Length: 314
Image (cartoon, rainbow, N blue to C red):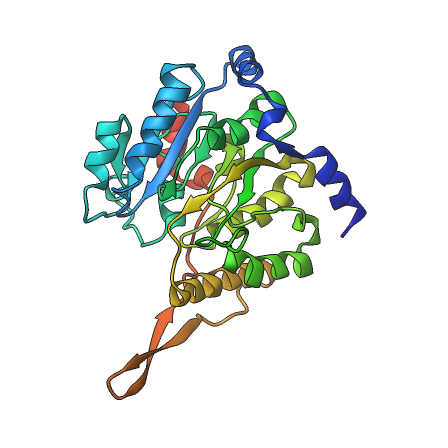
């Protein structure tokens, strides 16, 4: 590990208990900054309501930390939108944001579009499939942005159990993302959960970054933020345990391919052919090959979008 990373782990890795809520609230009042919480959601009716309700109760009704909760529905076929709205979120459908630009499937696409329909100086992203959710996830990653002027992006870190096995979640992280970061961006080797979906950042940073449209968004954002603001502007906070729905092996394979491609683009833009991944499923007559394209499209920095610039100026 680089000496720089060892120092970073001492100075930019914290626990949620390091910042009591009253200190975070005092810093928010003093700075006048607003906080938006965004949940990207696709068919998450079983979990999204509880997450919204906890944030609304703990951080809007009990204390004034969060200014808005926005659920971006990316085309759910279940009751995700109804459940989220009933719990107190403002629900916006992906296709209604920047409608003149046809949307593409992918989590990163939803996060990118969320900048157009939120007003917070600080944007906090929370995945909508979390179980046994605690508002510590929000206070943990928002806290440093309110109390540390030099910090621009904060990732949550946590244990990720897989079934009854502690610490066995995050398989794509361990098999793909962590080796890539250690080999190519060793300054980022200290991040415990580089692919985690819970992180917060200043709008002033997010609007400068390109957004991979798919599952590569977290790795791409981390690498691009490193090059934009430097390691000391990045941080992580331990928020405990993250429980969520796990993907099957083939879905993980597609995620890994997307993340690898995101890294490739950042290492050598424009020199790679459009990739695909072939996987196998057993059929009646043996194994059947199925080929899936790998997400490679990226949205430009939001600050380059005329509608966003006009909205910000207004």
